[in-house]
Length: 155
Image (cartoon, rainbow, N blue to C red):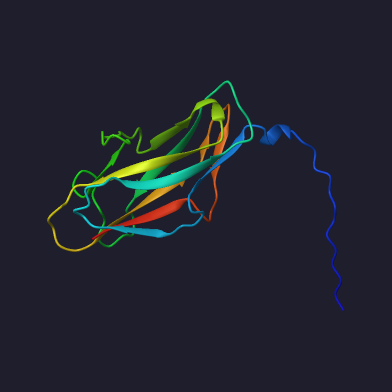
């Protein structure tokens, strides 16, 4: 027979090495694929959740990137889609990374917006939109392996 018991541990509040450690994940909390028609005129919305239990004097910044490595028919930024803000204005990447800022590191939801460009070339194209770790001297924004990637398929 095998017996097991749950151990009641008293974890201290305020572990210094975790006080400035946050998480960002896609909502829902999975790595699902999203399909959209190339002629879609509404902005595609990819919601994200920023987890924090604090209010800080600094803004926490999360990053995401576009990945097409290993994709047979990659979607092309500027031809198939654009990364935009809620008003449809183009958002630029810095060193290949897009940023989402969470003022004062307060827990919040935000959205990655994507505009389809109705590329007339036939066939489906794909791109992965991956949340990434952002480690700075002041904070760390980490990801969950179960909810850091959205594969976008443009039909």
